[in-house]
Image: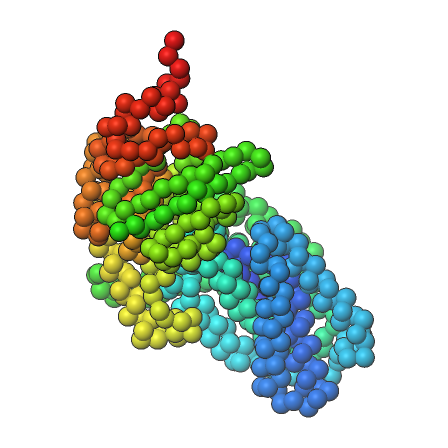
Length: 283
Length: 254
């Protein structure tokens, strides 16, 4: 039983990170390989605040989110003027930079040894509530002006700016919000795993977040969540195929991109209208 | 009243002069045409007015305001909207959302209000949807609400783009080859629609077009461009007899 709970905890935690990636990459088309950097920033900020400065747990989490947002803002200023592949390269560099910095700031971060002895403060209900909360926020954003602007920017930046959308500042909002969600996930991670180290979340893990978003469907939050749950729990339950897990993921990605370029779930969303069609009044 | 005034604007692309000392004045509630052979710089004029490219020299004034250095989204906000030569609809937004996205600048709710579905956000969303639906009905697109734009036939895509450009109730509408790819019946319909919306919404329209029937029928003034330079300006019937224009289009006689 404990094993299953453990698996669920890790899976759901990764789902929070996928939600952050969904907002940036799925909805807005910002390919960020630096998500791992924000996870680490969140995890280390919360852990150091809690252990070294005796900050209470909720405030430590809040500090992590704040730190993530501020760093997101600072990184966003120069990088959000870049497009697709250039943006990807710079965020990749950022993620690796964070990793190198954590390794070398040994006095504060413990260097390669990491930080051990973080008490377990996070449990499953807490992660679930977080997921629910974040999903509702993103869902509400997606179905109103904010989300339409995101998709417009992803589809055609020039046309979007001629619809009166301030593309740069909108991307900035998305990036800060995404960073905040990701560092929140990172902070929870520290208090769940109880041990963090600089290689906690490398660029491959960041890339997986993007891939999962794409497999699930860039226009479907629920698709991203389901793809995330399936992928992260799959690996744990099927330890014996562990090496083949990434091969299977690669195959899944291949088939999805060929046969369902819009992702498995396309633009289907979980809603009352879709589940109970008869309950929705005709417009 | 002068809606738009371009004062000798120029634009070079790597030494090639795309627009050279172009000047025009657009009066309120009038339709102006910009014509010229391919590559004459017509679309570039639109791109300069809407801030897609910065102007090299010259100034652009809109309703008494200097918009020369403003960015595209600010210019749209002031009341200039446009369509595109090669249709640029948002492929991942359905027909309704393609219209709604253009009304975003008219709404006032904040990001926080939409996160928690505040009452103002809800009200303005409702307002947006009603307006979008009324435009879809106006343009005979109401049965395609949930369709994605690139599944529509070409003529309807053009109509949808026109509807989208009207969503934010602009003062000045720029149409980049609105008749391209339309059949004669659709062009006839377009002419009627343009004249109608011009009167109903007190719009000023500038059209870049190759289709002479459309241009000659609805424009009060024509500007003729060739190699970025204006070679003629005047009423359609005068332009038809203008020597320089005929030369640009048909080449030298004999």
